Amino acid sequence: MEKPVDKHTPIYPIRTAAKLLGISVPTLRMYENEGLILPYKSPGNQRIYSEDDIERMRCIRNSIKELKISINGIKTIYSLIPCWEVVKCSEEDRKICKAFDSYHQPCWTFNHKNTICEGRDCRECDVYRNYSKCTEIKELIKKISGIK
Amino acid sequence: MEKPVDKHTPIYPIRTAAKLLGISVPTLRMYENEGLILPYKSPGNQRIYSEDDIERMRCIRNSIKELKISINGIKTIYSLIPCWEVVKCSEEDRKICKAFDSYHQPCWTFNHKNTICEGRDCRECDVYRNYSKCTEIKELIKKISGIK
DNA sequence: GAATGTTGATAATTAAAAATATCAACAATT
DNA sequence: AATTGTTGATATTTTTAATTATCAACATTC
Image 1 (cartoon, rainbow over the protein chains, first blue to last red):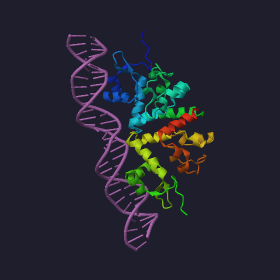
Image 2 (image 1 turned 180 degrees about the horizontal axis):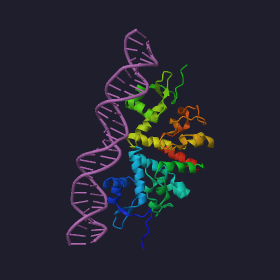
Image 3 (image 1 turned 120 degrees about the vertical axis):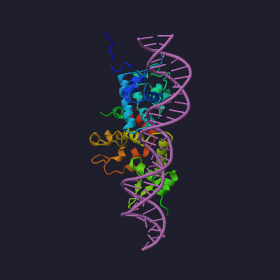
Image 4 (image 1 turned 90 degrees about the horizontal axis):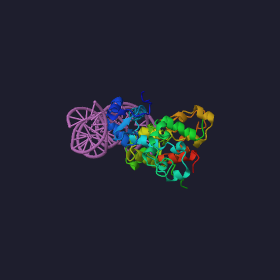
C-alpha cells in the first residue's frame, strides 16, 4: 500500500527543490526568510517542499523575473490580502492582530497569539494557499466589495 | 487681487520640481511614463507640478528608496485599488473597463471610453488623489469589506 | 560510523533596475 | 530674435537588489 501523495504533501528536500526551480539553495532560503514561502519542516528542522510549494515558487520567480516586482514589493502586495475576510476573525481579533495593520509583511509572518489564528499552521491556511498571485488577490478584493 | 494657490494648483516647472525633490529631470519624466504621476500639462505641452504632485513624488521616492519597492511593484499595488468603489461605476462600466481587470497598470493609465470616467481628468479623481500610499489603500480595502 | 546533505550566517558576485547624460527640435520668456 | 527651458528619445552610468559561494556545526541516511 503506497502512501497517497497529493500536491500538498512535502516530498522534496531543498536541494531537489532548488534543482527543479533552476535556482540555488541559498536563494530558496532567502525567500523563506523574507516570508514569501513556508516550507514544511521535518522533526530535524530540515525543509521539505511539496508540489504546491514548487508551484508557488514558480509564481514568485515569475513576479521577480518577468513582472519585475521586487521582493519587498511582493511582501507589500501580500500584506494587502484581506485575510480577515478569509479567516472570518472577530472584531476583537482584528483589534489586536498585527497582520490587520501591517503594510509590508504578509499575515503569515506574524504570530497570532489570542486570535482565531492562534495555533493554526499558516501553511494550511487559505490566505497563504489561495492568494499567491495578484490576479487572485484582486479577484478577492472584488468579491469582498460585493461584486460578482 | 492674487490668484488663490492651493496645494492642487500647478506652479512648478519640471526643473524646479526636480530640484525640490533632489532628483533629475529625466527621472521625473520616467516616473510619468510609468504612470506613477500625472502632472498638469500647459497649452504648450509643458509639465507643471503642484504642491500635491511634489508630495506624491516624495511618497513614491520613499517607496523606492526606503521601502525598496520597485516601480513595477508600485504599479501593481496601485492596480489593486478598488477604484470601482470610489467612482461608483455601474456593472456595465465594469464589464468593459480595462482598469477593472488590470493587474499591473493603475486605472488612471487607461482611457475610459464609454464608462463613467470618460472625459474625466484622472488628475482630479479621488482614486488618483487619495490612494498614493499603501496604508491608505489597505484602509480602503478594509472600508469596502464593511469594517470600521 | 562514514558519507552525504542540511543548517544558519557572512562575504562576494552578478544582474538589472534606477538614475543620469546627452541630443536636436520645439516652446516660452524678455 | 535671442536666450533659456522644455520635449521625447536613446545611450550611458550608477546603484543596489538578487543571487551565489563558502563556512563550520549539525542531521540524515544506509
